Amino acid sequence: MRRRASLVLLAFAVFFAALAPLLRWYAYPRLAKIPPSEYQTAVLEASPATLIDYGTMKPRTVPKVSIVQTLRGNVPAAEKVGKETGRDVVVWDALSYVAGPDGKMVSKIPERYVFDAHSQDPVHAGGEHVDGDAVRRDGIEYKWPFLTEKRDYRYFDAQTRTSAPIHYKGTQNFRGLEVYYFEQTIPWTKVKLPKTMPVEGITPETVRKAGTTRWYSTKRMFWVEPTTGAPVNGQEIHKEELRGGTLLGDRDRVTVFAGHVKMREDYIRHTVDLVKSQRQLVLLLTAYLPWAFLILGMGLLALALLLEARGRAARPPSAPAVPTALSVAGRSV
Image 1 (tube, rainbow, N blue to C red):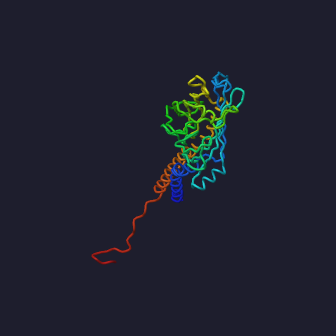
Image 2 (tube, helix red, strand yellow):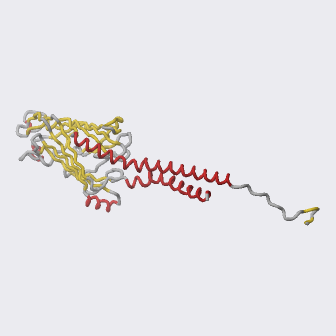
Image 3 (cartoon, rainbow, N blue to C red):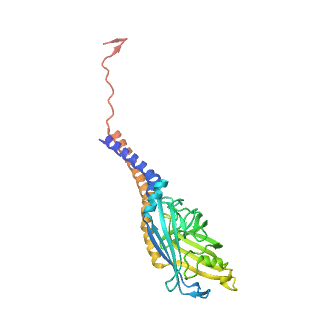
């Protein structure tokens, strides 16, 4: 019985020892993914801020400017792109809506972001765009990969329609979470005017005809929880200007918007709570279960060897064989 029990334990030991790496290196890369129906909203504020008055074409200080960022998963589009590419794909229809202190629209820029549900690498299909202009993203946007590394990444900037490095600057503690801090600076760059302008009668075309151009610069900061790759806080020191042309009269440049944009406190709390719960699910596949199964397998193996050793020690020694015939001088008697 002991020998049979040791063999059963040995079989379970091999099973759990083999299951540990399978969970980490086979199951996890396939199970950890962004759901295609994901829906997120974040509100950021610059308080105070500088904002242009299009009536006088002069900047003024306002108590607050709000930026509402919405990410909505487009399931039908994701299924279509998935069939075309043979990959698990997520399609986010995003909108950045900027409102002044009176709640009126300052600008709104829609986007479509298509990416791999597992790796967050961009997928160049499904009509990815920024404000209706087709783009080809290089690098990440909005979210870092699962198990984020301590290194620089390529991050897509929607205003310039280009990607640039976002630099890992160190590890910090944020609301009880260990996070990686990333920073990206976009120097002054000429960018396109939004296709939807806040004042009737002023269009991108009229601004261009006046010879006026729009310029933009920002310092972008993210605090990223590395297990999930989700930013738990984000800030920007954002600046926009109109330069040159007859629209500005005798001035070379006018500030359109300037402010230190920060995520609103209630959205920070909600994001931190959500990431803490999602983090446990990722750790379950990458650490908790693989290590538990490996330790269980080693324990079962030790128990199987112990039972086998005790079984051998408990068996009586074999009696020596008794000859059935004696040989004397070459004869049997």
